[in-house]
Length: 176
Image (cartoon, rainbow, N blue to C red; front, side, top):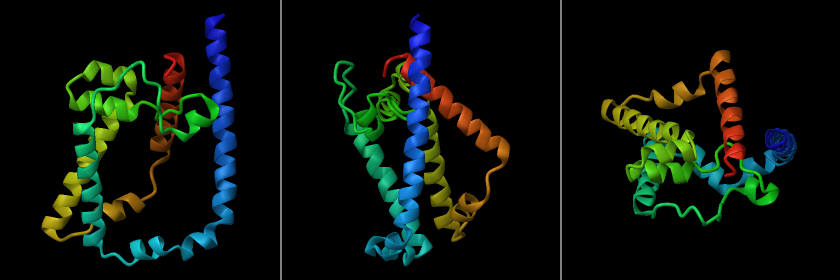
């Protein structure tokens, strides 16, 4: 009976995900023209590659400073900044990533993977981007943005979708 309830909750969550994605797609389509007129967008478009790189590096370092200074998560504290969870009361696949990263930085590796396995991918991803940007700045080449603009292979997209679904199921199952 418990597995049946978990399965129903997972089905409800993915129906909600689908509805939210459809809503966001419609919303973004309608505000596309407004988006281009925002001052911040024009500022970002007018930045040089070096300025964009330095901005990204700044925010990565700022994020790691936050994670280092943040206290270990309290299992009894159910506060979350996740908009999806605050609205639906169900966790999204990314719920627990920040807490997992805090666990990793503090040396609690098993707790981190149990909290959210995406924590490891997030930490590795930011480290790779940080090193890549430093390499581009030192060699005075621009390879990160062209790499990001490449179309991902179909197998990679399928893998990411499957991992996201599996992580969402894991979050629901453990009651995050």
